[in-house]
Image 1 (cartoon, rainbow, N blue to C red):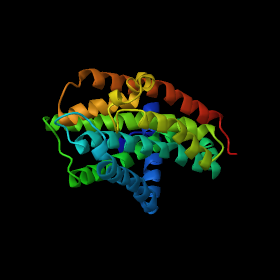
Image 2 (image 1 turned 30 degrees about the horizontal axis):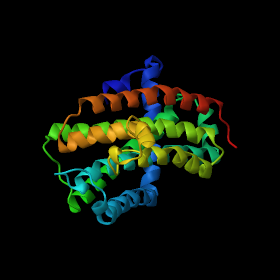
Image 3 (image 1 turned 135 degrees about the vertical axis):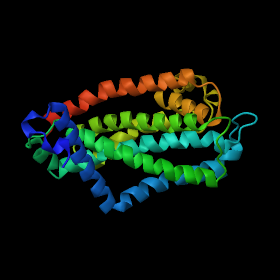
Image 4 (image 1 turned 60 degrees about the horizontal axis):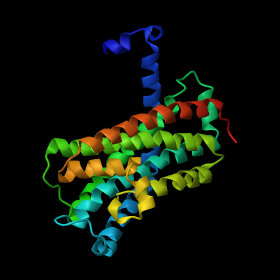
Length: 270
């Protein structure tokens, strides 16, 4: 028996129970995902279709500059799009638990107020990591190759995307805890995600867009994250985009985290 197991329950601090409760919720969601593999399969198929569609249908019509293959330009954008869309599952899952009355039951238990939300966001972080691995294999199969970079830069790129996905999961949690059902969570999540993803540098250079759209696309969080990941994967200046992307992650978490916890405390089953 470990020393941790011998520690009296009453002497364990608040942080310990917050972490323990979040782990219980995360484990519960992972088991649920394992028992319903269709959710993971469907979440993986969509980004694969995007890779094939843009590579073989639109790739020849999009000019990304000399010396760069479109598939190399595309994959960082698809990676970021995939984790952002995957983050929307947080709100959908919470809305489903709310409809089933589970959140009211969890709220009545002596557990951390943030455990349910933290557990759900961590579950979706693990799911996004798995989907990113699948997407890497698909990208390599269609010709994607890392450029003038190194292993640490590549790992930093994947780490940045996971941090970005985790921040967006909390935004999705706010949506999921604020709407009346699963359908509303799905529709409400996609309404604000689509403009961010498609009005960005994920699939085409910002310079090819109309001037009025460039002003929005250049500085929004998806573009800065895609540009940072693209520089980490292919080589090139990365410091500015990386710092801006990390600032977006911190800012989103600072705003969405408390809002999600507040919505959880105030919400009731509908």
